[in-house]
Image (cartoon, rainbow, N blue to C red; front, side, top):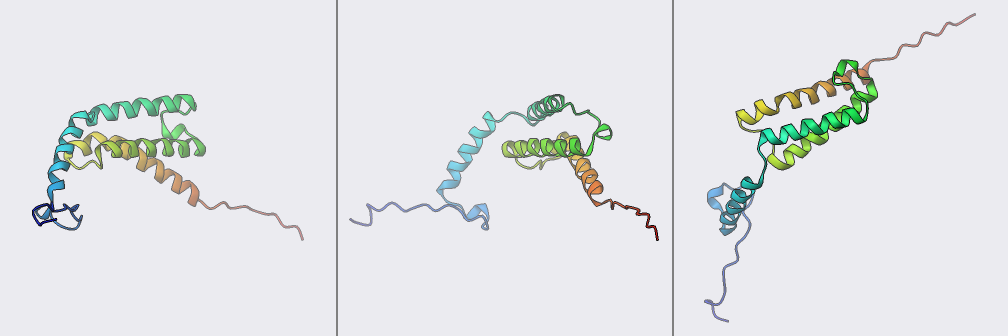
Length: 135
């Protein structure tokens, strides 16, 4: 084999290097990104489908819409449902980065944060048991 027969192998770019140090794979990745963007639903469409799914899960489990009316177990179930839906969103769109994405997703992230806070408060409340000792 001569040197002309050898095709230079392209390596995947290191995550620590800037994109200017990229390889041929970058161009292929950009093409894939463009095709992925066209097949991805919009942020609003994803949010709407997530909210429908969450409402269906609440209805199935007979959980109220308002967090204040939920029991501790219902809040825990709500937390898991919210967590799964946010992970689903992030698997499609990634973390909300732009101002528009953050504003669109804010109500769902705020609800998740509130549910987590309520659960952590409930867990940290000490239970005081008074025992009447008779001597």
